[in-house]
Amino acid sequence: MKTVDIVERIEGEAKLVCSWKNGIIDDARIEFLNFRGFEFMLQGKSPLDALIYTPRICGICGQAHLKTTVEALENIYKNIGEELSITNKAKLLREIGLNIEIIDSHIKWFYMFIMPDIVSLSKNDYSQYSPLKGDKWLKSSSVASETIKALAIIGGQWPHTSYMIPGGVVSDPTLLDLTTMQNYLDNTISFFEKDFIGGDFEEYLSYSSLNDLENIRGDFKDFIDLSFENNLDKIGKSYNRHIVLGKSHLFNSGKSNKRLTHKLDLNSISEDTQYTYNVDESKESKEAFGWAKNVSYADNFYETGPLSRVIVKSRGFVNSLHKTYDDSVLTRVIARMDELAHLLYSTKNLIKQIDISEESFIKPKISMNDIDNAGATAVVEACRGSLLHDISIKQGKIEKYNVITPTVWNLGPGNKNNLSIAQKAIIGTDSIVKAKIILRSFDVCSVCTTH
Image (cartoon, rainbow, N blue to C red):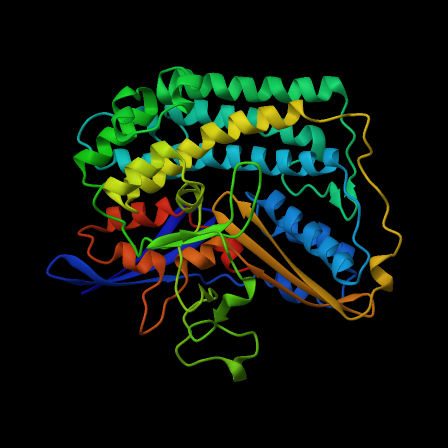
């Protein structure tokens, strides 16, 4: 038996095709069908045009695309021996902007994508989590909308901001601006305390062991209780291989495959298009069924995202959960919401470090349009995981632009010899509802995947 299900309430949409045997999913395929073509649009454009185009790849993680683009362009300067000077102020404003975007995304993801499906497994009344009308859904939506205003202060707008440029940022916040940003984050921390964990924020940050689960109250406890009631601590497990490409004040780069290492070689990343549509149909594989590619590191599929980040960072509380529950839905969701707390704390501290007397921008000595035959790669950590941009320019124009997104890492089509991360996580599940919960635990973004 085979079922076809449209996965909605994600960024974009996807199709989940499952084969069943004795009531259990024994094969699964995730199809991403809406081609968009950003990489092709950028060919022949001025390199600086990418700062406008790439933030529009996604309505959720535009900051991540912008930061990756600007760092790739700056790496081109470095590769031709003209490394740019970036002030600490500009670096902080870039990281703060990206952090706020991730904070906003984590809140929306939990309340709008995860909880509506989780509560549907229960016979009890959890109507407060109902989309568009439940009290908790509405309040979380309001909190997220207020939080993102902190980003608009330095970005000028959200989504699709383009305030980062080679040499720094075109943003010069005042002390009042920074105080206002702090106030927005304080309101989010208050929500985290009163509604999400039902406890003290600072105390939560000190959690370090599995026993600390017992101290959690509020909406987070609803998720945890429902997860144990419905065996979400046992499903959604994949290879337990994890990769983090980007670095920040909160994240370390590295990978975990039985052992943890912080050494990475970006040249070990490869893409495969055996099951991927091609704009040139004459070059298309007969086995193609969607626009997603496979991406691997040293020929292995790796999970990326908040769970991977906390494993590579070795942060106590979630690490203790991971040792007991592996890469299950329970662990994956807790890891992301635990990251929310640490992002809030870290971002407030970063705002305090800004010296408004520093320059925001130092103009490059050479125009991008005067650079010939150069290329570079950059990586950052987006809300869903590691994001990579690779650009080559020739005679001052973009010759090729390649984007590898977190969803491609997690939800690629797999191949005959190896299941993708999400495929392996889904196979063995006994219901389509749980299969879609597993998919949502990776935070599916079809628009990034089909960029």
